[in-house]
Length: 113
Image 1 (spheres, rainbow, N blue to C red):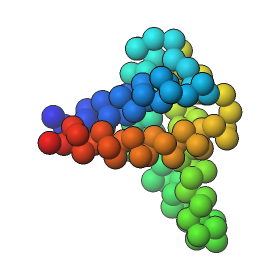
Image 2: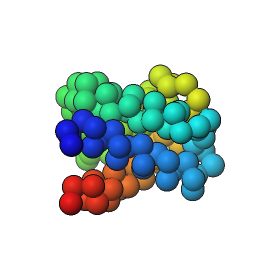
Image 3: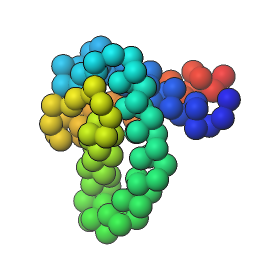
């Protein structure tokens, strides 16, 4: 399985789990989860590295905490780009991005074996 497809599946499963347990994230159907996961995967591969380089001085000044804002922005942008998915606020996007990071690590280990 290619890395792109594996990351897309891991993002989709993680978003589905977050939707089940969180009231601040809602998806209309399974296609909305897949579309949001695709948007998130593409943004993580293209925009996120650029944002990390541009925000490096601010990330350094905040001892790495600004990276949470970058992750939240990328997640918020993925929700804005996809149809049938909503996230309640940008603050929720930051918190959900932290949870998504942990879930992606867990599911990546599961799907890697």
